[in-house]
Every structure is written in structure tokens, then in C-alpha cells.
Length: 295
Image 1 (cartoon, rainbow, N blue to C red):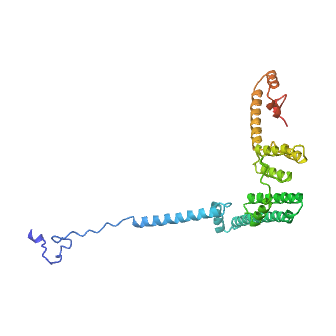
Image 2 (image 1 turned 180 degrees about the vertical axis):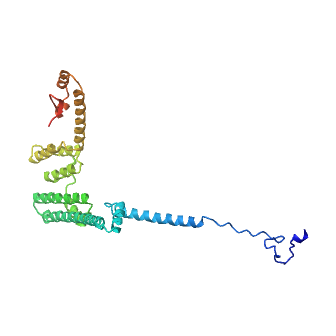
Image 3 (image 1 turned 60 degrees about the vertical axis):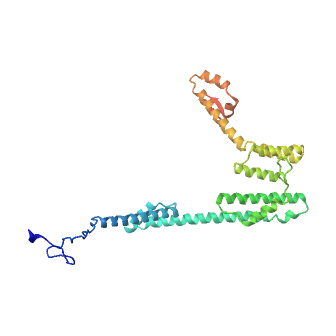
């Protein structure tokens, strides 16, 4: 039994046959177990990073080329590998055409804006004329051109140049601030132009025409009052309130017509039609087929 015992003497190294023996008082040395999937985990992390990079590239491409799907590019690339370059060339042509079209539209809009501003600038000298009528006419004509430039700027996204703001200030310079009844125009032409601009922008309201009528009453029986009222009459159904009322009236007439047409008895339909609302008869008429919309 003694021959199988291993003694540890102070300062003595491991004895033969006892390489794994532990010295008295010393902690055993433990080696961490190796991760058997370390290589696979590292490869997976690398693949995930590459996938994220590809996804970012696809997103960047889609943002830069809104008219071309990144999936189509992949198909074109595969066909290129097979020796067919037509899909790729077609996509390149589409992208170039779109880019050229956008640039051309912006250039055309910019030119049109500058042309309108130039036209307005042609009346600047007349603003200094001694004749009041000539000055008012020049101001009105300038306003038409400046409004045209402003409208094109909003539609195209092309910003207005500094010249527009300078001319706009000139047009407003010396302009009456109003007479207390909401009339802020030099003449009826300027009023008509402003009304048309508001109609085009869906911004005309009953109050605009009401204020104009108040001014017409202050100059009643004059030619200018008649012109103002003609403009009011021509636009009274174009205000936002009038359009909303018209839409509601048409909807009510449609409901009433449907209720009468639902009756199976012709005599009953005729009786209901004779007693129908004026609103219904504004939009509908009656024939052998029942209640139908007026043509």
C-alpha cells in the first residue's frame, strides 16, 4: 500500500507517475472547456453582418431610384450573367429618361417663372406715371404676372427668385390699405384677378363677395359698382360654401329619387313625384323608367 502513495515534500516537483498529483496546499489547475460551436457562431455573425449590409444597400438603391424596383435589378443582373444585356440597358434608359424629364420640367418651370417676372417688370416705369389710371392699370397687370409666377412656383416646387419679391413690394407700395369695408383693390380688374386666383386655389369664400358688395353699395349706380356686381354674380356659385351646399343638395336629391324609384306602383311614383321637393326637380326629371338625372 505504501508503494502506491505519493509524498509531496516542500520544494519538490511532481514525482514520476504523479504528473496529475496535487501538491499539498496548492489549488488544482482547471482549463476552461472549449466552445465546440465557436467557429459556427463566428461564421453566423459574419453572415448576419453581410446580410444587413446588403439590406442597407437595397434600401439606398430604392430611395435613389424610385421608379426601378431593386428586385428587377437582380433579375437584370442574372440575365446579364447569361449574356442578355437588354433588361439592364432598358432600366438604365428609363432612369436616364426620368432624370432628364425631371430636369427638363424644372428648367421649363424656371423659365416660365422668369418670363412672367420679366413681363411684370416691364410695367415698373408706368408705376411712376402722373396719370392715376395708368398707374392703376400697370399695378393690376403686374399683379397678374406676379400671381402667375407664384402659381407656377407652387406647382413646380421651383423657388421664387429675389426679383419677384422686389416687384411684389413695388406693386404693394402706395396701395390703399382699405376703406373700412374690406375693399383693398385699386380697380375692378385687380378685384377680378384676385377672385379668379382664389377660385383656382379653392380659396374663395362668401365673405370675399360680401365685402365687395359692401363697397359696391358705397358707390351705387356707378359703372364700377355694376362691374363689381357682375363679377360677384359670375362667381357666387364658386365659393367653398356654395360648393358645399351644392354637394349636399345633390346628395339629398339622389336619396329622394331612390326612395321614389323603389316604389313598384307607377301611380304611386307619379303621386310622389308631383309632391317632390324643388331640390329633387332641380337635378332630376321623370320619364317612363322612373326618376332619372337631368342630362
